[in-house]
Amino acid sequence: MPRDATPRRYLMCAPTHFRVTYSINPWMDPSKPVDLRLARTQWEDLRDRYRSLGHTVEELTPLPGLPDMVFAANGATVIDGRVLGAMFAHRERHAEAAAHREWFRSHGYGEFHEPAHVNEGEGDFAVTASFVLAGTGFRSSPLAHDEAQEFFGRPVIGLHLVDPRYYHLDTALCVLDDAADEIMYYPDAFSPGSRSVLARLFPDALIARKPDAAALGLNAVGDGLHVLLPQGATGLFGPLRDRGFEPVPMDLSELLKGGGSVKCCTQELRGA
Ligand code: ARG
Image (cartoon, rainbow, N blue to C red; front, side):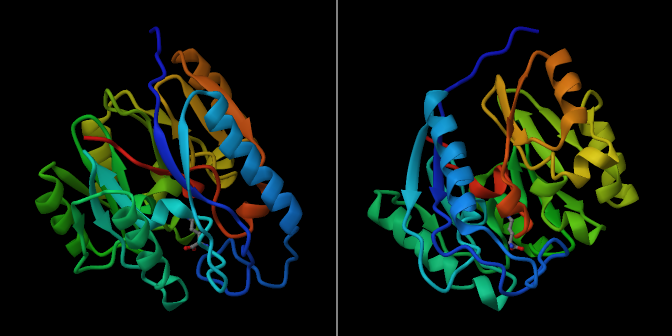
């Protein structure tokens, strides 16, 4: 099938204050050193790669004391230019929500919905042509799924995550083509019921295997043609090519120490 990239707008936040000083997911080990300069270079490579592929990258100003702010995907969900703000599950990240809100206010986004329930933005919300897929189990509340459905007016499909290593939906599932309903995911990260729902809605999905999921290979970003993904997920390259996608391996080893990779660093600003 011939594939086409469409230009995207992304919001990213430089890892200026990135550290692993606490542990709120199994990937985070505060005793392991982080190479901050390398983190910065790797992050810039990702940003510049988006730009060289023709995408626009906006930058959110990083704030001291918020070491996870580099994971910009968690700060909001934007569909049709309308913004659902985030409410973080952990105290350590609470203040990030306001920084995102401020960014949207000062960039002309008129419609910002202040959330009533915990949701970690695109960490747990994924947008396909027909649905908003929504994770729960570790971070976002199922009540936030209803809230998103009401606000966006799109059918929201709740999915239960059961493995703490895959604590956000975007660590276990990736939308490859949002003009269609094309996804890849790691079934073992989901409850049996959610696995059945995924199999029913996405019978042609690319099914990821354990080593690729463990390399955080599902934490990827697709533009319709290119799929930027963690370089360790080598088992996904062939299957992606077979489907007409172009895998773009990225090295984000330092950010992996915080439990995030390509997608976590990238919030998509979907226009009206
Ligand atoms: N340390 C961050 C946390 O545990 C990582 C967030 C990764 N972001 C993501 N979209 N999965 O909250």
